[in-house]
Length: 187
Ligand code: URA
Image (cartoon, rainbow, N blue to C red; front, side, top):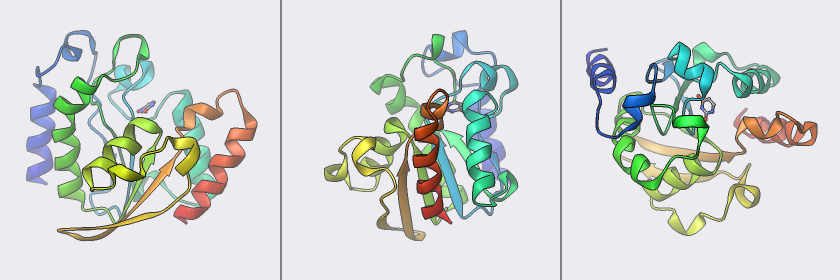
């Protein structure tokens, strides 16, 4: 698709913030252009930066397990992050970086037109709730994970589902169970 190709080229050449200086590859996103569900994470980590693909490291393994648990294939969804470049040492994204980079995410949402947006973790949740006029619902992921918010957009009704970031389950199997329950909502 021409629009997405153009966006890819823009991101590959992007120098809007300093993260381009330390990244190996930007991670644009991947999946089906006809996806009904879009997952939005935080930012590329070490492995994603090396491979230029989203969720291929430790958090990616957990993400795949969660998808499997509801019989969803990666080919059926679209997955991306708020930031397209890895912050050094996986530090949190800054508000400035989110502000600068989110125009790419907005464009991806416009192109894919998802019916369900799954926000993985606080950064994606806060950004998406704000974007769709639900700033008053922002309370931290531990309070609102698994809830479903409906918003109307130019392309129709969108359901927003905040979920814990899969990385929280790396060393905590209780969190994996909570994540699995929340994934059932997506189903
Ligand atoms: N964490 C994220 O938020 N995104 C990735 O792509 C990998 C880890």
